Image 1 (cartoon, rainbow, N blue to C red):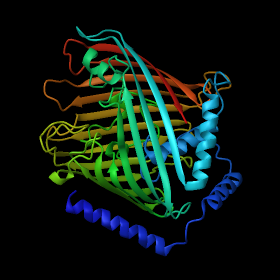
Image 2: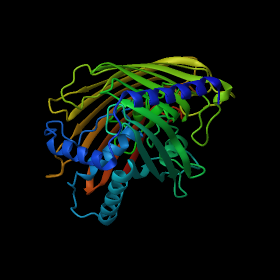
Image 3: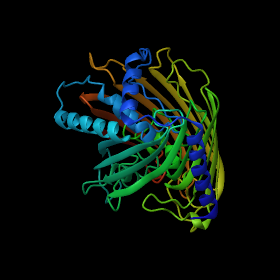
Image 4: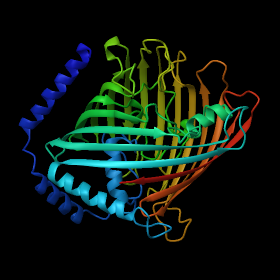
Length: 458
């Protein structure tokens, strides 16, 4: 571990104990639980935006980030509308819900588990490749509230364990590249890990909140779950293509040692700074001792909010020193370079059910997966396609990517999905992808993929 990172860790520890001495002591778990129940009982009706419309956390907006995944699992437990009223997983959901609540009340440790299955078929394939594939992904997440529990200056230790496997098929993420020659890749994240499980994708300390006016996170972090993110974009939940979900005109390193801090200048304006190991590796601790860093500054604002769940528009400016061996890692192709990424997000209706997102990113020196990336995304929550069912969403995305890899060409894609609860706490999504001018196959100007995705959380 480098001296600079050790110094940053020491500073975080000092800041934590300084906040301890400045504030009141944490409430015992039972008192905190009672306070939470009282707050929920007296909370105003969240309509018109409603609990079914996601919102980001005080630092990250990614729905799979631990600070967002756990609250989303809690909200999802209250949403019982479904096509079929009785779930085959009902007993498991009820047991795990009771057990997790007892654990949290006693210790301040909250756990969450998400399971996703994606089936995908393509309308054609290159010689010697498959025309279909499937893969599973799991996320096991925990947050242990240790300091100033229930207060704006709360400090907590968070971890994330991931697993991914493809059942002996070609996982959809690989299927798009290998079978179609696509760098839009219609099955982002749905490919096997080797080994199947990562013991610690994330392990970090986080303290602060929007109410406190500051937040920091230090430890093993995942930059692509922090920068340029939206509460409405995640492969297990909405769009599934790499082009639509990711911000890979940023040379985002893999998970590794790093630190990030947010300063709220106003309720609707904030500034973020991030530094992370450019040699990060989700399978281990990376190699921060090499001194290769990825750094970024992100400016964010809620420009025209219409509800309390309005998303943030963001401008990210970044620089990477490149990887130690010049090889690619995650969104970083290896060379040093810099770039920027702009995301504009706006509620289009007074109730917040219609969301528009426009993204554009540019990288330099062939340092990122995409040299240019542009997206226009639209989501509409509770469209009432299936009678009484709520908590469904439809989305359409138009994507353009110009890869930074030699021998490739720019690619366009269209993505349409509809997600609805087939059983209580079990969501089913149908997705259609159409890709044009496939980046890795100059002879193919159009191909299609069809996907079915299942998701449940505990």
